[in-house]
Image (cartoon, rainbow, N blue to C red; front, top):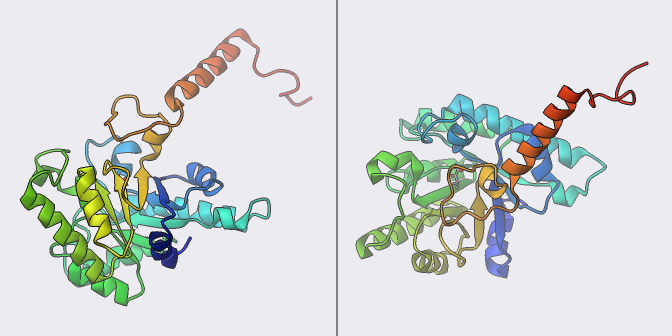
Length: 275
Ligand code: KIV
């Protein structure tokens, strides 16, 4: 998958699958799957560091996560044991809170730091006030993914994590935002927590693909957070999440089995020991 494939997918109707991933081991697993795109989301602040929102994510935090994921994709692509096509994942790294709302020099420096980790593109939230920066990045060779609807970096401005675009005026504003992101040169847009009908309308009005999360079935692709997809997060379960395995349960059982075996002396066996 490369940046040109996004438009091809839009044209052909083949949906794009994206998942967040933040660390080397998980990214090695993801790189060997059929998933198209790996997103190093600033949700790392919540899922990996335990913060209550994405606001504490910093460029240093995102650099570390993005570099780990990019190294995994690199390693898996290089490995002769794997199907090279399968492992060529497109890596998108999130620009964290306010890192792209400064002057042009500082904004570019933030994007440069993420691209130098090995990411193939950056993602940023919102349209108004970002258009010139997006244009500048695209003209400088940096692919940009947009993100509208529920933009978690604006959670305090939005008054909480809530569905966006229910009112006609808000829906019109989101459609205009999507158009202006496309016009500025974004290659794709995440639509987060918007009504399905609005997501469909935005998708039909763009020539670049939309990738939905909580945006219904009619976007050009879907994204889920790693911990949600794998059932690792038992505390938070919004209606748009589908967990494809009971990860927390599987891990708990495995850890308890290990603890039991240690306590009974069943682990390690002679075979698992050196003579
Ligand atoms: O940071 C993130 O995980 C995201 C996705 C929810 C799209 O931006």
